[in-house]
Length: 112
Image (cartoon, helix red, strand yellow):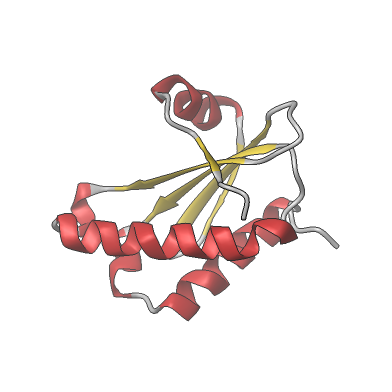
């Protein structure tokens, strides 16, 4: 199995926030930007407003798994940042997955 390439540097996140395209719904905000590579890189952020470390990590794990299982259905060559909103804490896995696909389709990065 291929490992997911992640965004780690603050400068990469800042670049996406400043010059990337974004869309949002009630659970997630998705930022994308072309990266000039053949693969996608992903970063996940969860605010401390969401709750304690246990709740934040639960949401982060769910989002990471949603991305991992559906990475092949996304077009390659993008930097992607997924920001969890406070309501994501109370969402089920299925609701988060629907929310992710909704944002990805609005941005036009789903493979056809």
